[in-house]
Structures are given as structure tokens and as C-alpha cells.
Length: 351
Image (cartoon, rainbow, N blue to C red; front, side):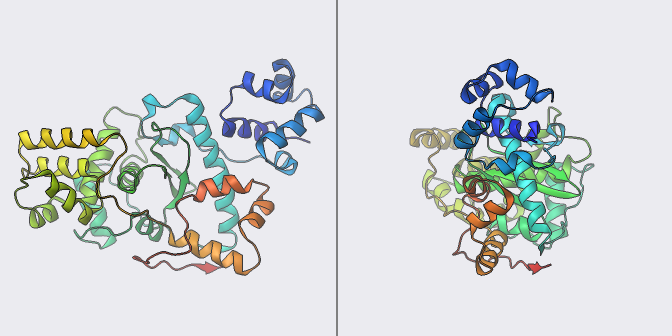
């Protein structure tokens, strides 16, 4: 018996409207509708086309119900510019991540989260409070993904090819999740991760849909990655664009983010602030001067390495979950790596 919800999940992952989906399957839209409401089965020829087109095995569509991220509880960046198709595809990726995470959690003991709720504090106070709670003072953060994982945040990647989708986050069963678009620059991704962390600690109860939520999360991210006291201690008066490019690597942020932060504390004057942005604009969209290498995950590297030693490569994991290997690769793209530098050791125990 096919599960209509799982068929619809794959439609969303393919980025198709229901009309386009019916056309892709070679059936009338009314036939698809009758299947969706449970009064008719999907024609065998359509199921075959679905499996061939999506690369999902037939067994996936017969599995029980699954859990979608609750759209009202999801914090999306660039929501106004995001198309419905891209949003639905990203949320559907979250549902796949839940199935993967549940499978892993049955076999491994992962770190419990140590996030705090700072609803009543300002974004800058929230960032300082969380840093103090985590015992990291005002020092620069070497690897944001490792830091989040060590504190119990589940981190997954998105490879949706749209510049309007940066990241999103949510809570599920008292577990915090962050999804990052790893097609962006490392600097962009680090800021996105800190931005979503801001939503998780500041907006869990009040929601992130109010007008000031995105600005608050941006302010949190800037303060979390670049504490004002450290900026003032390390940077004198900035006199050239090259100074910005050179110094940005200390905090692992973009030149634009550092320019903004230094202007806020008075280390960059108004005229230079505007002229540096003009210089950045000349480089082109998505181009970051003096770029950082990609950040990778300790947890996913350890898990995949341990599974491989058990004779379960990624393809074997895909078979067990009845999810295409490419979908698992998308969730872990740019996150897991066989070679990494351990900046914040994470313990991982097999259940």
C-alpha cells in the first residue's frame, strides 16, 4: 500500500507543482488527486516512472507516516524572496534528515544540547550570555559547526541551488536543528549558522515570524562571532580595504560583516565604510576575498567512519533507510569529511 504523504514528499524534493508532477508521471491531475485523498491507488506505470525519475526505491513509498518540520516553527532566512517550491523542497529535506537522525540516534549516543533561552535579553546580551554559558569567553571561534555539534545542535546541509535560501532552524523533541546551504562561502555559512543559533536561543517560545526577528538574529550572529571587546582589543583604526581583508580571518567572517562591525564600534569612519562596500561590490556577487577553507563536521565524520568499519558505507545506509544515496549526500554535503582538524573534541558512543 503506497503512502500518499511519502509520494508528496518526493514531489516536493523534485520541486514540482502537483500539475507538473502528474505530467511527469504520465497521469491526469484528477488521478493524482484521487490517490492523494485515498480513494484510488497510483497506477503501476506511474509508480514505475516515479521510481525511475526520483531514484527512490518503491519500498520508501510503502513506509509508515513520517514527520515534517512544522512550517510555523521553522526559521527561514530570506523568506520573502524564497519561492514556494524552494521552501517546500527544503522542508522536505528536513523530513529526510529526521529519519536519518532517528536511525543514527538509535545506534549512537550524541551530545545533549546545552542551549539556553534568552528571550528577555537583547541580541548582544544573548550572545555574550551564551558564550559565558559555554565557557568560550571572547576568543574567536575556530569551527562553528564543531562548536554547535559539541553543544548538541544537529547540523545538516542543504544543496538547494538558490541564492535566496541561506539556512533554517527549528526545535524538534527538545533537539535543536540547523540546516545550512553549503553552496555559499564558508564565511557566509558561519554567519548563517550563528544567525540560526540566535533564533534557537532567542525565539523558541515567541517565534521568529515577527518583524524584528531577522534583524535580532543578525545582531546576535555579529556579536557572537565578533565580540566588541575582542574587536576593540585587536583592531586599531582601519585605514585601507586591505586591512579589512587581512583581519577578517581572525574571526572567520566576511569582509562585509567585519566592515559593518568595525563601523558600529567606531573603528571605521563613515566615508571609508561606504567606500569599502563599493570595493566589495566590484568583486562580484558571492566572491569573498581571502576566503576561508570549508568547515567540516566531526560527528558525521566519526559516524560514517564507524559505519564503514561495520561494512555499512553510505550506499548501505541509503539501502537501510530506503532513501537515495544522493539525498543522504545532500544532507551531508560539505559537512562530513574524512580529513579534518579537531578544534573542539566531541565524544561519540555507540549504543
